[in-house]
Length: 359
Image (cartoon, rainbow, N blue to C red; front, side, top):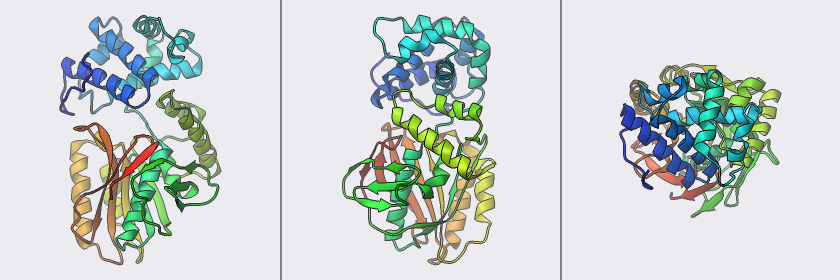
């Protein structure tokens, strides 16, 4: 495997695309402090040389686009779930990052013995809800307030998964000394901030509502375990955050509905908007999973609504998504009235560890 990312069209299909997807995911994990997950993905990729199980054959013969479908993370999530449940003790040395073991042989044996449990993990995209990403949403809202948009926000999130970022009003943020939210908050975030601090404003929330095609109920232990399985095991703080989110959702569930992204956006934009409130569409690490036709519908709906926006009823679009050309994540905002052109505010860690402020 080359130690460089292989450029591939997100929509590319076929066996070569599957191999590239696994190779790129290994490098991505290594570059983002996840060596154990890289080992698991590499071991799964090795199954493709001689796919001897239905699980391996389904991966090798994947009919869709493996990169867009996050196929390596689907498979790795299933392996991690077995480890978390204590169902495959032979995985322990890999998850302990032990040396001098045959990762590929261990994973191949686990697949052979637990294939029935693993196959359903290939049926849907990973759920990678992460509360740390909400620091980017807050920073973007501070910037929007600095552009003279009303600092009270009606937030609409697509790809909300379990709605962890819909509880943004319950968290505290220290963004380079700019403090937002209740103290101490259900969770507190102090990302490593690079560059100038964001502008200081008092912001509030008029509404927080989200959708997902497969919403997760955090209060259901089985569904919560599924979310935990998608957390990279190296990132211990994310497990603590998940437990805090479960407690918060148990106390008061976030407003989360079952819907596809395009239908949700169209319906919510059709609702009356109160004066003095900025309506915001927001999403993080989800756009790549939204089908192209829905992406087009959302973009058209937002631009049409933007054309109708006024200073009293403005519209904004906050996106924290991967730029797969340069292989990092970017915080990009559009707002109306105004040009509606994208403004890149920051580069950011995928899980909220740091923000490089560019605005």
